[in-house]
Image 1 (cartoon, helix red, strand yellow):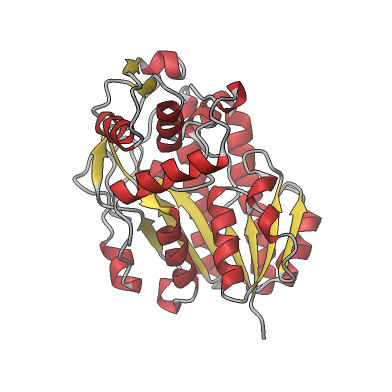
Image 2: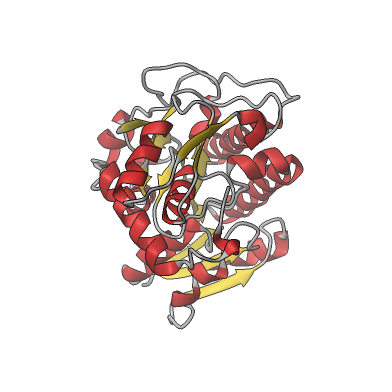
Length: 333
């Protein structure tokens, strides 16, 4: 019997890679996406596949979501407002999409006892300061007057709701907190730093670093992440638990810009601009964010295959082969 999967946000960056992986396993895939941040081009290669189906619609359309949930065995809930720039510019959309969409999805899944993988984010750790963030660390968020924190709050509520369904009704749900997943098909339009740097380097620059560049992050390759979430959904011991998912290879943003420039063999100048100019006055960024991966490593033997240099090479190769880098429309700040 063929396993049937529903991917919300399935035309997005991670969602389309997940669809590709599930189809390669011989599983059936249903996608729902409103294309607000995803792209139909991401799923174009799958449209002629007998086991692939897609619906262009919002996950706040409850009757449609109910029908799709009823058809499937496993639900990968990836649909969300994403990217720092989008979150700062459109906080209403962020809150409504993340909370209302998840509420509908979980309610429908609970009616039929479907397996759910809920995508969350490292943003829920907020301004906390740790050597490495563990899943049971406290959240430290900024004031409600700064929309920067609306995303973290909305995803935290998603987690609370999902875990409540697990505790009260036994809904088989797994939560993953992504730490900077990157790779082909990701774009820099919504604040994603690596594709933005690569695009700027290949276009001759400048490569623009927000702040002084001393802030650090860890970047995981999308196929490593996709393999992990598929495995987690088939691991009974993972149900009702939260898992960090990413890489522990830390790099400052300034160093990332330098490595992208070198690997792209670019003459682009690296410049810095204040956060206030990049986003809004009073914008707060997280200085350091490194995950503790002990839990996911213990649960499924998670071991990322790609290091940062390999990831940068793959993203550069993707942009060179898939984008017209001379077009003004392809330029990002």
